Length: 263
Ligand SMILES: NC(=O)c1ccc[n+]([C@@H]2O[C@H](COP(=O)([O-])OP(=O)(O)OC[C@H]3O[C@@H](n4cnc5c(N)ncnc54)[C@H](O)[C@@H]3O)[C@@H](O)[C@H]2O)c1
Image (cartoon, rainbow, N blue to C red; front, side, top):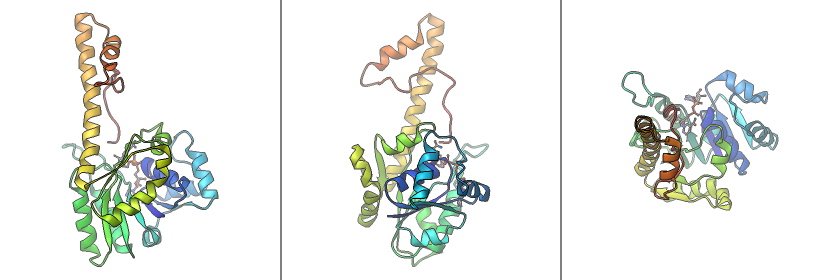
């Protein structure tokens, strides 16, 4: 499969390098000229264990390249992934979707042949509808399916998380779209990763619901830590005591500074 990755940040670079390692032809695009120039020199702009070797070996095998101009990679692609930032807006905390919508507009202008445009950025439910509307308005002739494929990787364990995920979620009801996405992720079946197909809005909801649930666990154990201090209990042992219950689980039950991060 030929893949264009729009946005070569944490998610775009790790996903692009892993897709190339699966055997696909990947071009990572970014507006940041300095970032693309340093990648051309073989310098990795982020620290992620194993990423430098993964990028170097796939560049050498000519399966991975970098550019600032999306037109050719998008025109040639079977799938175009949007992996640009969606930072929280100051004031109201909403996700700033301006980068996603700007990328959708730019992508639309270069589409040729059947293409799946996939939102990998973390976005609120309904964003895929707006991405599709923008693409169809900008290029009414485009033969396109807009899918959702939220990313669950963790910084610091990103390559492992990408190659051995608990699940891959793909949101599209279109058969051609499902076929392309199935082909892209097929190598993961060797790692027994469940590939879950669902509707686009459901996929978007899964990402927000997963993040909200993990944030809830962290917030909950921090509240229990405060309470434990007041009543003279040991919160680490409380966390272990409740986490050993399979219905609860031990992960994300460590009292600490609270939750944060790009999503
Ligand atoms: N970092 C994580 O751990 C993580 C995990 C899961 C999901 N996500 C989500 O993935 C998305 C990307 O996150 P990130 O951490 O990779 O962000 P990032 O800020 O590291 O990278 C985003 C990149 O997109 C580029 N960009 C913006 N607009 C562009 C355009 N029109 N064309 C080309 N490039 C463009 C920027 O220059 C930047 O390099 C966000 O929605 C984030 O919430 C992040």
